[in-house]
Amino acid sequence: MTGPVLTLVIATRNRHKVDEIRAVLGDEFRYLTLADFPDAPTVVEDAPSFAGNAAKKARELARWLASKGPLDQRRGWWVLADDSGLEVDALGGAPGVHSARFAALDTGQAGNSPDAENNAKLLRRLAGVPLAQRTARFRCAIALAPVVPGEPAVQMFEGACEGRILETPRGQKGFGYDPLFEPAGFADTFGQMQAGIKNRISHRARALAAVMAGWNPDQVGPRR
Image 1 (cartoon, rainbow, N blue to C red):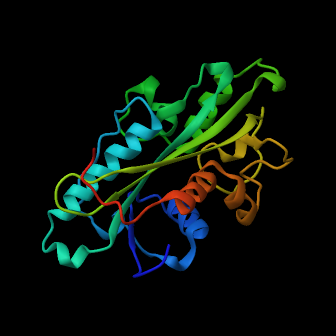
Image 2 (cartoon, rainbow, N blue to C red):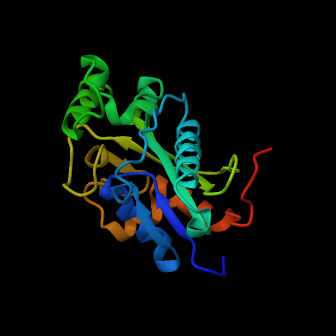
């Protein structure tokens, strides 16, 4: 991708996620996040798939940004939204799209659950399951939507990282289920792994690599 510097509005306030995205994509872009837009609407992630949630966030936030003042000031702006989570085979693919609020499903608590509570529930649900049957994967879907008049054309990209869930957490790095997830072919969990290695093999890194290989910034809409 060449030409004028593009602005990516990363549709999250999660600092860890922002750091991972910037580390993979590098300095080719100007970055903003939802922290720069405190009045941005909260998008309800109620789609049954990661791709559906990512596309919904990207589309709604792009439309909202397009409504905020002269569009000339937002030329070359794109919303980058992702949805990601953990799929555990022994649990039928759970927690899946509910990964961030896995524990809250039991309590009715609003919003996402603390990482410690999600991890504790995962370990309880897998109690007694042999290590060989604790196969799992992290999956990530990324949607890119241009900030333009009308309905933006959303471009989709995906990535996955296979591995297994350990019986006890290891490491303090990363976030979410990282201390429990050992990627295939590695002896360290994501919670132990150096950021440079994780940012080459993770589900998000693979989805971002697909973005860099296949994103067409000239395709700005409308959807077909």
